[in-house]
Picture 1 (cartoon, rainbow, N blue to C red):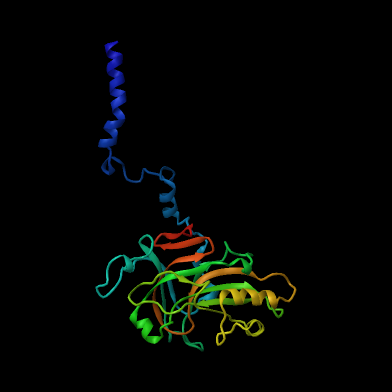
Picture 2: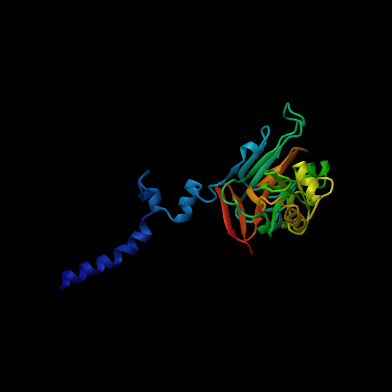
Length: 270
């Protein structure tokens, strides 16, 4: 009996002892497999979160940069909550030049987006969109609205056209700090890039529309080929002015896409 009780006490205390004694020095290098990691750690290892996000090559011209990065955390001595990435530690860093190609215009363009998850969704179902942006003084000196945009490649089914880009241009943003949420459903300007679609809908770069008006124009001018549908959704910059900065918290309807150095994390919109 004494031996049995002693053995029970040792067994019961073994877990507590192990919990206080086992650390990184106790584990042999290379012996922990991905299966032993929790889901979040595995997602970071494989970039499984947001695996359909990346640079849209056919919509990128020159050597423009769209990079999942850490920061930025303010500049010129500006610190505090308003200068840090809105969620997590990272953002989508974007850089384009205005004089970098042999084409006309000579400016670059970069698009970072998703070619899979929104494919076939009706444009009429886009009710909420927007992002937060880190703007610099150098960018704003070129133009107060010199900023990235949200660009949808869509099949408009207007004027027998099956492809155009539907672009949102935001308003001005504060300088050297993160902006608040810039709402594409209520602020900024929308237009279509295809000339026939732009003319038919009245949403041109010179005469822009609200999101509600652009969606209604697609319905009013529908050519009978079916409703307008989405191909891709992206954050884009170009082909116009040079820009270097960052974007985070891209919202599409009920989800917010948070850009982190290891991938894109989708969360429910507030």
